[in-house]
Image (cartoon, rainbow, N blue to C red; front, side, top):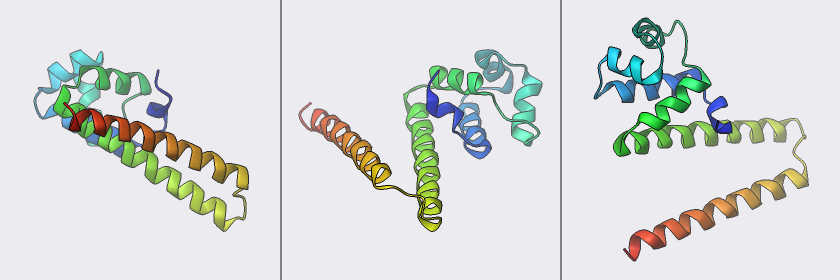
Length: 124
């Protein structure tokens, strides 16, 4: 299972379910996710939220357009959480130089990957 799924908040999970319901009935979505229709209704009502396993299934069943929207939600959710954690660490004087170096390395890897993907699109 993808580690990032576990980090998604309730609002992001609900938004993903709503995206998948744009082109599916509650019954069809429930079947695809391996849950009951009442479970999907509970997600929508905010009485419970989809499990990590259910979210992993959601990623597998999403079509290309849905995947684009879903990954945008995921990236924004994770980036926002990271920004908040860094801000709190700074406020508490808990951010170490090694943490900053690690963040720079990760950001560089992301930029490199994005740059390669953009180059693929430009030269296709």
